[in-house]
Length: 201
Image (tube, rainbow, N blue to C red; front, side, top):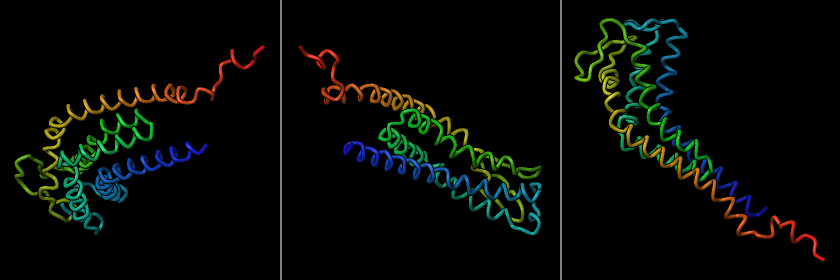
């Protein structure tokens, strides 16, 4: 019983680390979609005019800038996702570890990109070269919109590495979960006594 309490605390700490990494990578993207959801709730079509008197464009631009600062740095993106995956291994959740490293970097880039493309309208260009300045809901979006055009290339750059690491972590986690019960049984031979030694003549 005494050994189970520290193990539970360690797993809880590992899950807290995982949650902090997820919040760090996806939190800015969620802010982007909160602003986008406000515009949808107000039934404001994408355009240069303010959304029912609200300058939602400025809020969306700032949220996108924050999101791109985190997600477009692939070194930070993969490093934080890797930390979250290793924390899942300590929490004895290998499937979550593999899926975290596989999906978390993609979600951090795809979510803000989807928000940008959902807010585009005719006369609001998005290009990798950064030509043009889109005005959305009363604010100029600048590079916060144009960065979305480079997201596919960023994904192509790190996806093979993240997929390989996710597969490796999944295999390691599966192996550890398979071997650990055997190790406990060997270390505690009297915990589950053999029926042959229960009754002696």
